[in-house]
Length: 421
Image 1 (spheres, rainbow, N blue to C red):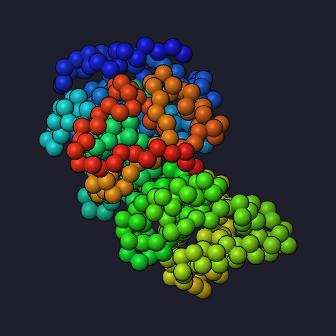
Image 2 (tube, rainbow, N blue to C red):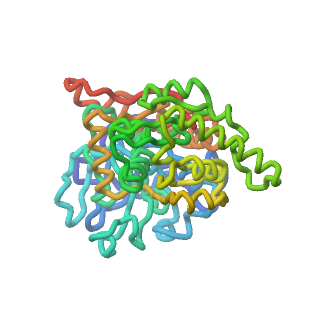
Image 3 (cartoon, helix red, strand yellow):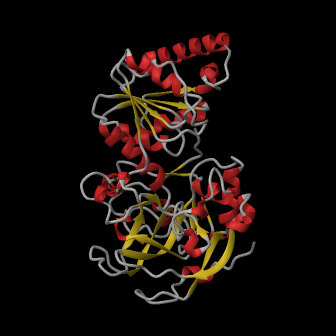
C-alpha cells in the first residue's frame, strides 16, 4: 500500500490541541487473520485524554509479537476485553517514543512538549495493590496496546501518565522506541524477581534474542557473570560483545530439547544430553548458575531445573516452545531450588531500567528501521519468522537519526545487529 508520509512529519495542530482524525494501522474483529490482511491503514478519531491520561504524538514505534497475536486473534481475541468493545478497533504498538501533546485533568508531572518513552503497563489508580504491593498484582493490570487499543501504530496514542519516562537524549526516536517491552521485562526478571547481585553466575537462554541481549547487559552492569545459549556462532560473538563470559551453541546439544512425548528410552537419552550441557555451563562459568533466565518453556525447562545450582532460581517470563511444562521434580525439592514467575515490570522498575539506558550502561539492540507504510508488512515478516531482530517504525520522525539531541556526552546509541535466540 502506498502511503503519503509527508503529513505525518509536520504537526497539524499546536501543542495542547488535537486534530479530529488521524492515520492508524488498525485491526478489526471481522478481518482477523494474517497480519498483512488484518492490519489495515484507516482514518480514525483521535482519542481525548481522560483524567491522569496523556495523548502523545508518536515519533516512532517498536514492533513486538503481541500485535501478531492480535491480528491472528490467537491464542485469544483481544476484542472481548479491555476497551475494545467500546471502540471496535485495535491499534497495536506497545513500544513508543514521542512528544506529550495534550495532558488530561490531574496530570502535573508532565507537560505538553516533553519528549518521552512509554512503558506498556497499565493499572487502575483505585486498585489498592497499586498503593503498596505492586501494580502488577492489581486486578485491573493490563498491557497497553494489547489488552487495550490506542497503541503506537498511529499518529497519536493515549496512555496513563504513569507510563511516561524521559526519552534518553543521546538516542534517536527510533532507537528510543525499540527497547521498552523486552528490556523492562528482563530488568524485573533479574533485578527484582531474581535479586541478582555481584558475583552471581547466570545462564541465559535465547541470549541473542530480544530479552537475552538486555539480560546480558544487566548482568554486566550488576557485576554478575553470564553464559548465553544461542543458535549460531555468529550470534555467540554478539553476546560476548555485549558482556557474556562465553556462549553455548544450542545445536551442539540438540538432544536436550524436550518434546513432551518421549519414550522412557528417549527420555533417558535426552537427560544424558542435559547432563552434558550442565557440565559445559559449569565449566564456562566456573560453577553451576545461581540464576537461570528462562522464557523458552517446554523444550528447555527440564534442563533449566537440573542445571541451576542448589538453592538457585529459575526465573521464567514466557514459554515460546510451549507452556505445558514437565520435569523431574526431585531435582527441585531435593536441591531446594526455586521457580519464580515474572511478568513485565512496574513503573518504578521501568524508571530504574530507563536510567541505565540514559547513562549509557545498557544499549538498545536494533535490527531495522522502516517507514510507517511498512507496518503491516513487518508484522507479516515477524509472523513468518523472517525478521532478524527488533524493528522500529518511523511515524512522526523523518529518518532513523532524528531525535538525537545529545551528541556531546559521547554516550553511544543503539547497537545495530541481526539478533535472535
